[in-house]
Length: 152
Image 1 (cartoon, helix red, strand yellow):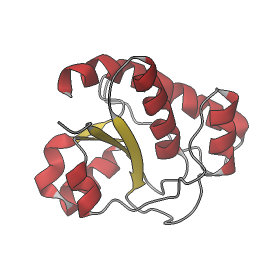
Image 2: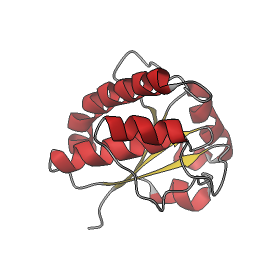
Image 3: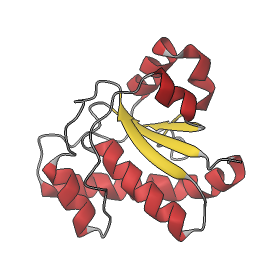
Image 4: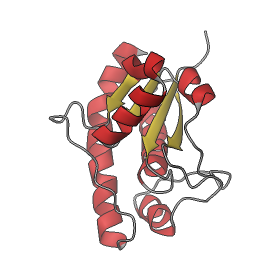
């Protein structure tokens, strides 16, 4: 059986979803949960590296994302490959359901287990806002880990 794939999704794939990818992969690895994690955007700035503030927040918290990470648009092959897609906002979920209705059953809000909360976009803000976003992602991912073990 192949390793399950979880895709973390935001708008441009340069801030929240790369941070979520790095955090989820690190926390899953530390928990012994065998999954692969990637990230995409619904309006990706295809080919761009993650935002420098996002990279800084990850580094300050002890996470890393590979030098090869570039923004990627969510397309049919990525939607098909993922066993689970975790989105930051309801509008991302709606976009996927509109563009890829066959995959709507595997799209969940990152904040699903926290009262359906959304993860705010820190784009264009400073280190404090990116650090705060990272803390939100850590909390949401901590709620997802036991569920992922049961689901995947």
